[in-house]
Every structure is written in structure tokens, then in C-alpha cells.
Image (cartoon, rainbow, N blue to C red; front, top):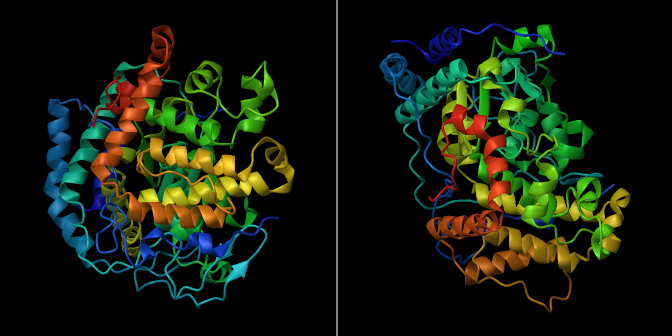
Length: 491
């Protein structure tokens, strides 16, 4: 029998690899009212008396089986009853000083603040549900089986280690490493693979109690994506693997890496950054070399996105191996976006962050992402230095694009229509209309996933075969290292 700490030490031993040295906008507080707080809600992932549903996307990873795999699993399985028993005894820790040891003595003791409206952030009194949180009255969703989750994580690690011995992978880790020594935790950032979730987590845990009280937040999930990206007081604790000193510190922690099916990750980048407005000023205009859209790229197609970005480097569409090479980063845990609920439960419980597990269970990931996406895009559309968007796109056009994206990713029923005659298309109106559509057009998680896969297939089927071959070639190492099939997911 051995503890999780000993398990981490064992996984570190298994990485028999050398270390390498390498070169002013206020948010409307009503927007944060969760969709689930409506008195009458439809069936589906946002039902008041039903626990949140996380849609698991992508195909099950294909794992390599070997004698070494069996040996690793035997070690892990032998230790898991003890780990699970220890986990069940843990209490929610308090907020700790950055330099202090981790506390496990009760929930965060933070004074209830008044609403704060600053240039960028809005927070609410903690007597109300936090951003995107549902107050559930029904039975809770069964917690993941941590024994099975740990076995799967061990299989992923072993598969990746085996592939590292056979593949020629770039000898670098270029992405940001978020670092919390007080929780013995570090995370290598992979955009479009649950990175906002981990940025919220690390930003919140990096704060001390009085900072949390000042901001008026009690949960990582109250921090918006916009604030993570653009608000200086939410800076994240970073280290670089290119520094030998930082590298040594990172390798002392439990290292987390999250990945995603490469084809879904690429498509998600297109929808968020190019179908929506985020990258229009930096790359969108450059894509449109002729016609009326040279000054306003309103209708970038998936094919245009792929053809333009394929030869270019950017962290949002770069292969994981160019950002967080696992053969060098040597993760202790490889999580999949497809099983994010299970994997994050394992990490948080083993990091003695049980109270965050409880917060996480109050919220639907899909719901939170929709609210955050609306707020993020309306803020970009409205802030002064992006006045380009006012001339390029009306609020109604922006709302229409958001509506389309939510349908494409399977969060909103294809039957839900954005009314043509709303009195206003500002962010508050759109949130309220979104709530109304959930009552009218309920969508189960299974149907939502089927709707998403249909849209994914349609966009990829429109690509010429030579272009598709180039995509598969670019992400080939990711497919192999992380056990994904090099084809579109079907479930």
C-alpha cells in the first residue's frame, strides 16, 4: 500500500528522462444570474432538480497494453483503497497565505462583501449563488469512481511514456507553467483544452483571504474569462521550463497536463477565435485579401481558417507537443477534456481541495461556458480600443453569431431561434432570451452531443482531402502520444 504522494514519486521514477535547459468596462451583474435559477426549467442539463451534466466528447483513448502497463496498474490499484479512504476523510481547506502550508480546516472564512463594480470585474454578495452556480434541491450526481479514474490515468501515463521512447518529439516546453507550491501543484497550459478552468483555479488559489474578500468572490468559478485574460489583479503564478531553476521547482510538484482530441480542439479554436470576433483584428483581416470583408471579416469559413493557420504557429492551434511536450514536462496526471469531471475530481481531492469539488458540482460546465462566452465577446465588442468592432458588427449580429456557436457545440437546441424583433440586443437581453429558449426547447446531453458531432462532421467534410491530410500530418504526434484515433469522433 502507498499513498498518493508515494504514487506521484513512483510516476516520477518511471520518467527515466534527462532534464533539458531551453533557450474601462463595467459588467452588468444581472448577466451572472445562473440559468438554473429560473422557477420552471425544462429537462436536460439545466433542470433545477437535476445535477449538472458534463457532456463527454471525443472517442475513448486507445491505450497501449504491455507488461509494463500491468505492472504500473498493479502498483496503483494496490494503493487506491488507502487513497480513497484518505480522500473521504478530508475536510475543505481554508484559504491560505501563499507562503503558508495548506490548511484543511474548514471552508474559506471570507467576510461577505458588498457588490464591487470596477473597470473590469463585477462581484456579488456571497449570500447569493456565485456566477453560473445553481442552487440544487434534488439528488446529487454520483461522484466519479476514483479507483477507475486512477487506473485510467495510469494507463494514459504509461501509453505516453511508451510512445516517448519511439517518437521524435520537439525537445522543449514552451507554454506557461502555472505553479502553486503551497498546493504542490503545477499545470502546463494548452489553450482550447480546459485551460480557462485551470486559470480560474490557479488565479483563485494564488490569492490570500483579504484579496478574495476585496474582489468579492468565494469560488474560482466566479472569475470570468475576460478577467483572466485582461485584468492585472488576477495575474497567474507562472514559471518557465526554459529556466533551469524554475524547471527544478516544477519537477518537485504534482504536474498536470490536459489534452483534447486534436480535431475537436482545432474546430473549437475556429469557433471561438474566428467565427466569433476574438481574433478578427489580429488575424481575421489578414485572411480576407479581397472583397468587402478585407476591413471586416464577418464570415470566415472553417476552410479559410485551416488554410491560413496551418503553416503558422500560435498557442491556440499549435500541437500539444509544441507547447507541453510530455516527454520533457513529465506529467504525473494526464487529463482529457472528454472526461474532465472525473479527472478534475481526482486532482482536486488528491490535492486536498475537496471544497472546490463541492463548488464544481454546483455548476454545469456548459452553462458556465455559455455565460462566460457571451460576456467575453460583448466586452471585447464594447471596449474603447476595439472600436473597430462597432463599425464592423452590430450587437444583433454578434448575438446571432453567439447563438450559432451555442448550437454548433450542442449547448442550445437547433430549434431555438433568436428573435428578429427584440427591443435591444445587449448582453443582458441576450442572457434573458437564452434562459427563455431553454424552457421552450429542452435539449438532453445525448442529443446535444449528437448535434455537435453533426456540425463538426459537416465542417470537416467540406475540406479538400489534401488539406485534411495536412491536418492529420500536423497533429500526428498528438494522436499517437495521447492515444486518440486519427479520425472524427463519433460519440
